[in-house]
Structure formats: C-alpha cells, structure tokens
Amino acid sequence: MRSAKFSLWLLLAWALAACSPPPLVQQQSYVFGTLVEISVYGAPEAQAKQATAAVLARFDALHHQLHAWQPSELSRLNATLAKGERASVTPDLAAMLRDAQTLSIQSGDLFNPAIGGLIALWGFHADTPQSRVPDAAAIAGWVKRQPRMGDLHIESNRVWSTNPAVQLDLGGYAKGRALDDALTILKQHGIRNALVNIGGNVIALGQHGDRPWRVGIQHPRKAGTLATLDLRDGEAIGTSGDYQRYFETGGKRYSHLIDPRNGWPATGMQSVTLLVSGDRAGTRSDALSKPLFIGGAARLSQTAARLNLGDYLAVDAAGQMQVSAAMQARLR
Image (cartoon, one colour):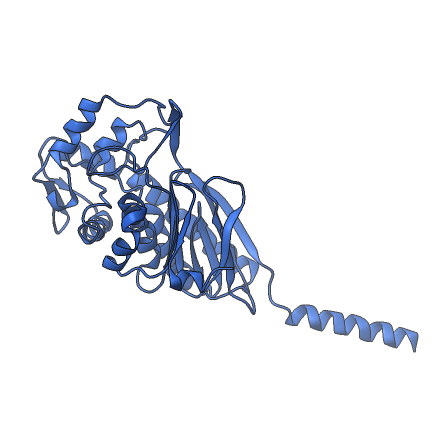
C-alpha cells in the first residue's frame, strides 16, 4: 500500500511538471553601448534560445550598420555626403533614413539625426565623452549651416544632400527600431510572450503568464525607479535623459541631447519617458522622446499634443515631475 501511494505521488508530480509552463528564459548581451536583455515566457527553452539568438544577431547587425564613429555603412555614407556626392545604400538603410526623415519633419526638427557633426564636436562620438566644452564659435558655425533631415534626398537606394553639413547620427533612432525588429523576429519564431529591454527602452509581446509585463522607469538622479507600470501587448516605453551620456565640468552637466536650434545640450529636463502603442511603437517611443526633452518643460504638453503623444512622464531641471493624465492612470 505504501509503495502504491509513493508511486501515485511520483505520477502526480510528473503530471504537474508536464503541465506547468516552460520557465522564463532570459538572454543578456551588450549592444548599442548598453545592456540588452530579452525575456521569453511560456516557450520551450530551445525555441526561446533560437529566437533570442536571432534577435541579438539583428541587434549586432544594426549596431555595425549604424555606428556613427566607427567604420560602418552609415559612416561611409557620411563621408560621401561631406564631399557633396551621391551614395548607394542598402534598401534597409534607405528605409530607415526615410522613416527618420518623416519623424524629424513631424517634430519640427527637434529630433534631428542630421546634426552628427555637432554631436562629434561635443565629443559624444567616442566611447567616453571628451569632458570639454567646444569653442563657442565652432558651435555657432555648425548651427549657421543648419543641417536638417529635409536636406537629405533618397531616391530608391541613392542618397545625397543639398547641404554638405548633413552628417547623420541615428543614435536617437536605432534602439527603437531594434525593438520593433525584435518583435517581428520573435513572432516569426513562434514566440507569443516576451519582453525586450535595450538600456531602458522596452517593448512587450503578450504577457508574463497571467499578468502583464511590469517595468520600472529609471530615476534620473537616484538609484532605483520613479514608478512602475504594466506594459500591454505591443506597447513600448522610450526614455531620453541627461544621465545616460554626459560629462561635467565647471559644475555643469552637458549631455548628448543637443538642441539643434542653438547647438548646446538641452538643459530644461532631466528625463522624459514616453509610453507608445500601435505601429512602430518602439521606434516612435525612442525618437519622439527627443523633441519632448529638447522642447523643455514649459512647452511639454503642447509638444506632446502636436505629436499626438498622450502618455508621458517628465522630470524637469528642478527635479519636478510632469505626468500626463493618461500616463498617471497607468503608473504604480
């Protein structure tokens, strides 16, 4: 009798284990100069690992394609544009440039990937910022030349510029595009539930078991989070902050988020986080957080309304939070 009970217990334990969902599979890497983490729920480990490997391969390809200061397809294009010549690019890059151009025009050029020359002048085209404020006349010279995405012409896979000052830096676009690509790849591999985090830019697929994916919003000045929220299927959050890439000198903080109107790092905000859903949620959450950050606290709600962005959380230069009503309802 005792043996029969023991055998029955083993059978029940085996059945419960067989019915339980596969464990959470997580994969980390270092791409785009930041930590990347992919979490897959409810899929067999082999399938999850194959899917995450494909995503990380795409991230690595984007990183090498879009690097602004190391040899890449983008840096070769910039060299050609500086000569006033036309360049042939891959269909993939041509599509990204068209997309970035559209977003730039929508933002009134506050999101402006054409100011790569200014970003390099400030020393942010380096793994470690130069910690030196450039000559004011050199900054003014770049601003006077007014490089904009509207100066870029893309015809099939041929690219040229009517303004030789255009130097492309897609650092404010690449992580968001990578999130959207990740969702496509995961779905192609039969993954239904996953969370992809690229240095705080996050997108959700499905949910984590019987609950949504819960994520935190980084505090711009302290360790820990400002708040948490539950991400629904297909939603993304993107953050622009002056704590990500910056240097300090003379008691002032200078971040990589350059205001194209004056050529200096924007100073009105500490961080802006967007919650976006729908088509190209990752790309839009990344790129469109820039115009809200650069536009400043006084015009935050107007800029958000013009870009049709309803969910945002911002921390201004004084450390005060501004939260939209729609975002407030989502925060914990």
